[in-house]
Image 1 (cartoon, rainbow, N blue to C red):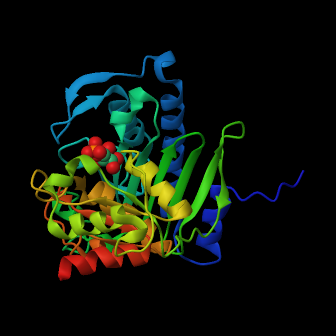
Image 2: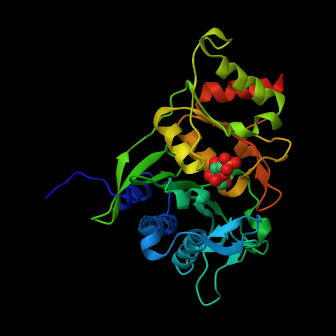
Image 3: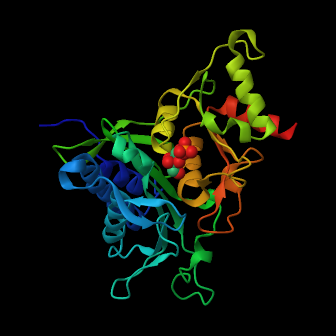
Length: 338
Ligand code: F6P
């Protein structure tokens, strides 16, 4: 029976065949990541029934306590992506150094970066978490033979060099949000069929909003432009903005960004006098989310300039993030410039 449904596979084949936007290797790569996300979704969903909750008893490269599901999600993504022949190397927020492709597998032209389980402090309290990923091209080797040395340096490309980015959010439904540079599109996981189905084509973020997302407990540490912006929002109808604002903070970037692409809003994790460079990771969180937000008509800055133009200096570099509805992001950036 015809359903008229567009699966992720069909969506990607159309991008490959009709628009020549991606090649077969990149299609396979995105499908493999999506398959890994299904496995992670399943593990998250099983929770305590599979003994998946709680701490793994280890710290990651950031010095944060790893949850069992952080470790498991990282393993699922590594194992799924090692053998396809389309990658030169992988890098994960959970691992200090890039992960080379084992020598017994062929190598390809892409670099995959991921945050295997974003927002993992929310796992044990049953709040949405997710996976974020970004795809870069591995520059050709200086000799012209084969691909780059897939060391840290190869990954240090600005967000503008990304050729695909996406995130999955494991919430009431499992959603995959994806861009390959022609808009931002959302897919819902049909668990019975085991496939992602295009349910939110061409997502557009409203340019204006009256909703902000920020961790208010850091207020005393913020820089003046961010404090001014939030003070003005809090002043409501009788303040300089002349309208009341609402606040939301899930503390899972995937869930906060998903809300913003659905109904607008501004998300901020600014630098402050504790997190002097910012708190979120440029390569695993800020860049892929910025690509997705820009492709949906939103904007993304570090307060001073376009986030995707930041020149990375380290794989685990942190950065200030301000993204979402265009007019509000531009306002905060203007406050920084004043
Ligand atoms: O970087 C991980 C993360 O959990 C993000 O998903 C989220 O936006 C942020 O940290 C929450 O930080 P905090 O616990 O300071 O509110």
